[in-house]
Length: 456
Ligand code: URP
Ligand code: ZN
Ligand code: ZN
Ligand code: ZN
Image (tube, rainbow, N blue to C red; front, side, top):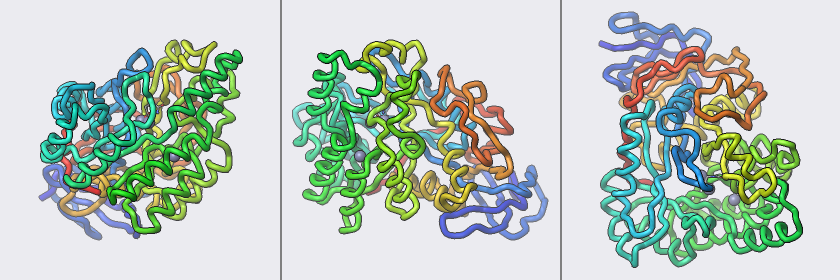
C-alpha cells in the first residue's frame, strides 16, 4: 500500500504540531494517520524527530555570470547542498540577455539544470529588456510553461541588468494580467554610483564603503518606489532580500492596506549587521543589499515574529576566495554574493529550537508561504496528495557550520563557526532519500522542473 512509512514522528504545520505516521506512495503523501501499521514498503522510525515539509529556497543564483566571473555553485553542487540542508525545491534566476526571449532564456538554463539537479527546481525569469515591447507578448507563454514570476533589478546598470521605472510598470502590469508576480531587487542605483565615485576619489576602498555606498536610506527609497508603483497599478509585488527597517515598514504598511505585497528576507540579514564589513575578511560578506545596522536586524526579526515577512530565502550566490580577493584594495571589484543554501532551514529551525519563533512559523516562512506565493501546488506542506518532500529533523543534534561539512563547491562560508541547535537528519524528495546523517545520497538528474500555477 505504501513505498515508505515514516512512523512516530512529530509533524509540523504552521498551525499545529502533532504526532502521526506518514505513508508515501509513488512520490506523494498518500496517507497521514495515528498508526499506519508496518505493512509494505520501507519503514522509517522517526521517534524523537520532527517531520517537516522540505524547504523551498525561493532565491538562488546557480552558475550565475556576475562580477566578471560565475557564481561558484553550479546546478549540481548547489542542489546537492540544498538537499543536505533540507531544501527540496530551489528557485533559480535565469537572466534574460537583451534581445532574447523569456522561454529561450529559461529553457537554456533548464537544459543545464535538468541533468544535474538533485532536488526539484523552478525558475523566476529576470527581465532586462522588453525588446521594444515584444517581450511582453511572451509573458502568457511563459506562464503556460510554468514560469509564473518575473524579476526586475533596480540596480546593476553596468552589468546590463537594471530596468527603469517605466519598464518595471510594464512588467508589473503584464505580470498582473497573466496571473504572475513581479519580484524586485530594490536599491537606488544613482545614489550608489554617486557614493562609490566619491569614496573611490577619496581613497576609501575597504568593504566598509560597500555598506556606506548603499546604506539603509538607499535601499528604503527603492523599496518605497517599488511599493508605490505596485500599489498604483494594483499589481502584486514580491520584494526580495529585504534588509532595511524603513523599506520594511513601508512594505508592511502597504500589505496592511490590503495590497498584495510580499516580503522576503535572508538569514544573513537576520544574523549579521554592517559591522561585518569592518572585519579583516569583510569582503567575504559583500552582497547587495549589504547587511545593515542593528536596528534593521531587530526590525526584521520583529517582522518575522509578527507574520509581516512572508518568506526567508537565501540569495545563494557564492564566490571563491580568490574572486572575493579581487576586491582586497577596491570594494567595487568584489563579486557580490554569499553562500547560504545549505544553511537556510537549519538556521531558521535552530531559531525555533531556541524559542525565537515557533517551528510552525519556520515551516511557514521556508516552505508553505513560498509554495503558495509562487504557485507550487504540489509543494510546501505535509498534506495528503502533495509531493513527499520531507525532512526529518533531530532537535537534539548540535551542528557547527564549517566549509568542511558543507556540500557546495565554494571554499569559504560566511556561516563558518555558527553553531545550530538541531539539524536535519534526512531529506526526501518525492519520497526518495537524498540526504542522510551528513551525507548526500541522492542522484544528480533526479530533480524535476516544477511547472507552477499562476500566483499573485
Ligand atoms: O549580492 C548579491 N545579492 N548577488 C546576487 C545578485 C542579487 O542581487 O541578488
Ligand atoms: Zn538582488
Ligand atoms: Zn528593502
Ligand atoms: Zn539575488
